[in-house]
Amino acid sequence: MLETFETRVELGERSYSVHTGGGLLERASKLLAEAGLTGRCAIITDSNVAPLYAERVVAALGGAPDVIEVPAGEASKSFATAEIVCRRLAQAGLDRKSFVIALGGGVVGDLAGFVASIFLRGIPYAQIPTTIVSQVDSAVGGKTGVNLPEGKNLVGAFHQPRVVLCDVDTLGTLPDREFNEGFAEVIKHAIIRDAAMFEELGAFTRNQENLSPVIARNVEIKAAIVSEDEKEERDIRALLNFGHTLGHAIENAAGYGTLLHGEAIALGIVAASRLSIKHAGLSRDEYERIVARLRAFSLPCSLPSSIETGQILDAMKADKKFEKGQMRFVLTASIGSAFVSNLVTRDDVIEALAALRGDPLA
Ligand code: NAD
Ligand code: GLY
Image (cartoon, rainbow, N blue to C red; front, side, top):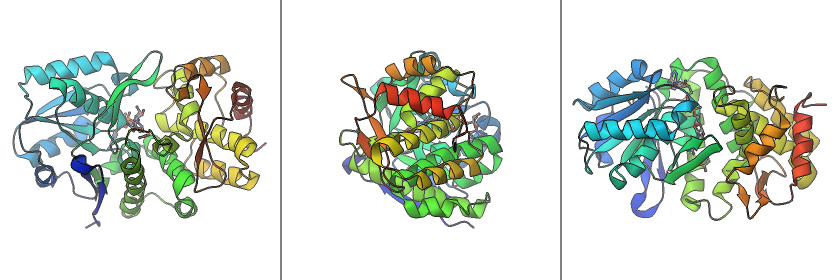
């Protein structure tokens, strides 16, 4: 039996537990009840995850929760899908005492959390994340939302879950590409907060025993940051955006679904690291070690030629990381720490994107 970890996100009355370990789907009823979730519920999931895990969660809950399935993929993070899901909740007769379970990756988590934040002006929800990205990042912290054609996550709400169950057994069915993309967020956490984890990742191999401690450590990092700066008001939570300013723009410019989220973030991390050499004094040696870590998880470090610089710059304009017209960029001076800078100019970004087209080690 794998060890189970419990991490608290400390937010006063809205504090909650994140459980990480194996066999958690089977214990869902008890863990949800401990978090006060006992009424009528609906499970929101996607077309890949439903056939794998929905029945097990339904059985664990002992009742007959409605299962609402959306198509797998980033395109489901939309107003149109949110409306469909809200209507299904209304048709199923959920009331203000009911709750929602997000069962799936970050797409399902962001969508279901958003729906929970607006349905009946807000009902509780639980996260049962089933990808690395969602377990180490998106299921923790209450950022929910959908995309607009103009940009990612442009509509949303802060709505904290009541409990998060990171069942690492579910990661066993992740295809290699989806498994590896999650490590972009893990490497990001290591760069901004945990130099020791950055070292240890060099020896990581994929097996179930190795997963719980890595996921739990990343949950701790995320939980601590969210507890310190829930609404991204103090330049602490903003550090989680390392690699995301350009990563989101690249993901949008490529067309949602072309690059996986983590793959776009990997490209954003390489660009942010290059900008860190120029504006934060990051050493060339540390930059090369960052590229090597990303490559060890088969993450892209060069921009595909099909994605034009103009499209990326256009996508950046819509990004929420601009403040009063100034670009706010997260940089690192050395692995294990990061800060928010406003020194990066549009020309710097164009230069970094040009460099991203070639060999990242040139
Ligand atoms: P995803 O939800 O699209 O999942 C990736 C793929 O894996 C999908 O096809 C999904 O159906 C499939 N899948 C999920 N679990 C599986 C399993 N156990 N076995 C087999 N297949 C499985 O993508 P993701 O990478 O989990 O999340 C990316 C999304 O998360 C993006 O929309 C991103 O913006 C968002 N995100 C949000 C936050 C936040 O703080 N809210 C943080 C990071 C990322
Ligand atoms: N994923 C960034 C955040 O939660 O703030």
